[in-house]
Image 1 (cartoon, each protein chain N blue to C red):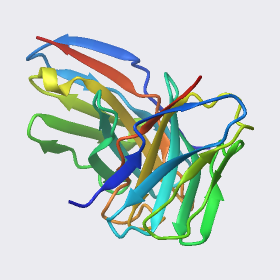
Image 2: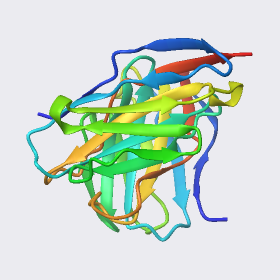
Image 3: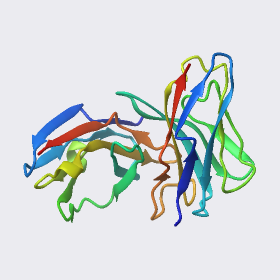
Image 4: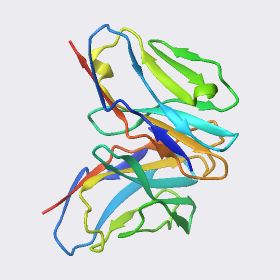
Length: 114
Length: 116
């Protein structure tokens, strides 16, 4: 079975703090893809990143960075120097093997206080 | 601009009534999806369609129905059989059903359904 766990339900930080959102996944597939989506208060999901299981290189995009570690089945997301506009629910998701289903974690609500 | 349009943004249903949520995309995507979002439960897949006139049940299809008569459109009907329909519904599309492509799923703005 495939599963995505986001153990942090809510995180509150003060602007300019760094924050890491954790994502742990389970899958028996050797080929799989991991995603992060952002859901601001307006409701739509915004795609942030896609990573395949064969690419363990960490990625940095501006203030965002992602740490993919197959050894611990984790795909963590760090926001550096957080801003109020980063306040949203963040979802980690997984798809693997022959399935056509994107499996979502329960999301982490990030509140960045001014 | 290309994207996914969901309407209405807010919808109210009376007991015993069927309601239909609209989802239209102009991205020329083959695959479309419907998700339900409840607080603390993330997103759960209701139905998906990989091509016109074809659709498959997701994890929580009971009480819902869909149609895919046009590539651009994938309406979701919440029937009276769905006893707990209050939720946020999100429609998505992707280039094809397989996620092994360069493009992820794109989402609409959602429809919030409530019971009167």
